[in-house]
Structure formats: C-alpha cells, structure tokens
Image 1 (cartoon, rainbow, N blue to C red):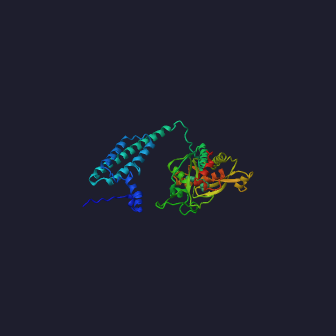
Image 2 (image 1 turned 90 degrees about the vertical axis):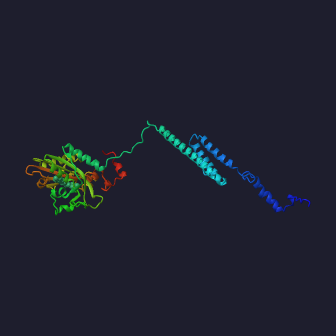
Length: 384
Ligand code: 2U9
C-alpha cells in the first residue's frame, strides 16, 4: 500500500480555529514566563536560592533608609524570600526537605541581618540625639507655685507672736474626747457640745476630729511646768453645713500664756500689740462673752472706723470689727491639765484663720480656700 501523506494547510482551517491559534495559543507558547516548552530545572531554583543567601551576606546597608530598602527587597510581602518560598510548589517531593532547609537559612539570615542592623542604627540615632543636647543651654522655666492665702495669713500671725516670745506647738488632728471636750470644761451633756458637733471615728469609740486646737495646749500643760507661752495653729473640724461663710474644716490659731501672776492686763496688752502689727489697728475693745474654758471671757474687736465704704460695710456701720475670742483660763481647766491653779494663772485666745484671710484679701467665698484651683491661688503669688 502506498504511504498516505496528510498535508496540514493552515488556510484549510476554519476561521474561528485560526483566530484561536493566533490570539490564544500562540501567545501562551511564546510568553517568556511560561515555560511550556522549557520546564524549570531544579538546579536553577536551588542555585537562585543560594545566590540570594550570598547576596544577603554581601549587603551592607549604610543607614536606616538603606536598611528599609533591604527589608522591602528581601523580607517584604513581595520580597525575594517570599517568592523563593513559593517555588516550593515546583520542587519534587524528594527534594522538598532540602529546599525547605535552604529556605530556613535564607529567611533566618535576612531576619538576623535586618534586626541587628536595626538595633545598631537605633543606638546610633540615640547617641546622636545625646550629642545634640546642649548642656550649656538655659533650662526650661519651671512654673513657680505660690503660698496659699491661709498659709500667708498664718505665717503673719505666727511671726507676730514669736516676736513676743511665744513658740509654736502642734498635736494630733484625731483626738480623744478628754482632751478635746472634757478637759476643756465641756463634759458630755454640756450644751456647748452642740455648737462644736464633729466627726467621730466609728472604729475607735471616744475618738473624734478635733473641733479646736485647745487639746494641743492641754497636752503641753500635762507635760510641762509653767511658764508656758505657746501658740497652736492647725486644722480643725466641725459638723457644719458648707456655705460661703462656713466649712466643715478650717484653721485656727490659739494661744496660751501661763505663769505666776498673769493678769487680764497682760492679755489686753498682748492682743493690742497683735492687732496693731496684724491690721495696723489703732485701738481695740473687749466685749464680755462666754467660753466654757475661760473666765472671764471676751470678744476682741479692732477699730476700723466708717470713713470708707468698705469699712462701713465690714463693720455694719459700727466702725468695730470682731477679730478673736479670749479670756483668763478657767482654774478648773488648769487643774484638769495638772497645773496648780492656786499658784498659776493664764490667758488664752483663739481665732479662725480663714476668716482673717477672707477679710485680708477680700475673698467672698470660704470654699475657694479649699478647692485648690490654681486660677484662684495664682492671684496670691506676690504674697509671702
Ligand atoms: C486652753 C484653755 C483655753 C482658747 C480660746 C477662744 C477664746 C475663741 C474661737 C475663735 C473663732 C474659735 O475659731 S473660732 O470659732 N475661739 O474664741 N479660744 S479662748 O482657749 C483656751 C485654749 C486652751 C488650755
């Protein structure tokens, strides 16, 4: 039988087949990335990985920007490490293990180089910042605080009495009933306790927040022999409704002078000197009053006059302004505190500091003194 020859003539193909050949199949066959006619050689893939490892070792990024470029080139989401890992699909099973190890080395080396250079550049940047710090430059100005108006007022009072030979004493703010009330001639059912209702410590019966600084003087009298010449400034508490004029906490200065032959004349002269120094007052007056711990007792007023509208308003048209309470220490109080009342006598006085501060600085609301709002306190920055 003669051989059969089949001639394939392109032009014999149907038009749609010819389009398919030219536009769909030919581009696939000639595209460089698709090695249909040339499957990848395993040796090429391995070689490329090894070359990349060598390239990483040879890289020398000189600064942080170059290091970032290094990271993107090797470790980025479209980086070489990732694309080489994707080649794993092409590696025959028996070589996958070897290729996997190569990939581990590659990734590890790229990571290690990146991390160590990153630490180097960060340290360099830090020390460069240190060098840029000018030790001779003037410092940042620190905002200066100022004394609280209550402290300024108290300091003035303390200063005047220390000039007269009084020393400052202090004691606990949580007191026992004896020192706060009973020793001060205010036993449990005394009506004066109503005016000095306070806060009681629930877990410690008989303990309370002191209502005045008198227990400080009582404690000094228990411990020392006369002559005693002390002032006791400090915080005190009362169960008061808080308003513009009163608060449940405030500060007092109390004074005590005990010696042989101390008289009401001594009290008067001491407090006149205080009024002159503190307020520039020209005269004082003493009005009879009552306190459980002094007998006789008095309220001291200073003369302001009614010349100015302010003085008229402050003194309610009388010219006199009440400043403090005072009196001769009740002999029973001396005895309560272990002092022989037949041998010694003394005078005492007490004043509220906030009240003086409100008047001195013309502050209209006592609560401002306890809020510690710097916009308020800043206004006293010139006071000492
Ligand atoms: C002892 C004996 C007597 C202290 C005194 C006052 C008068 C007085 C008030 C002023 C305004 C309290 O803050 S205030 O409400 N105080 O009027 N205080 S005599 O007498 C003492 C103190 C201690 C051992």
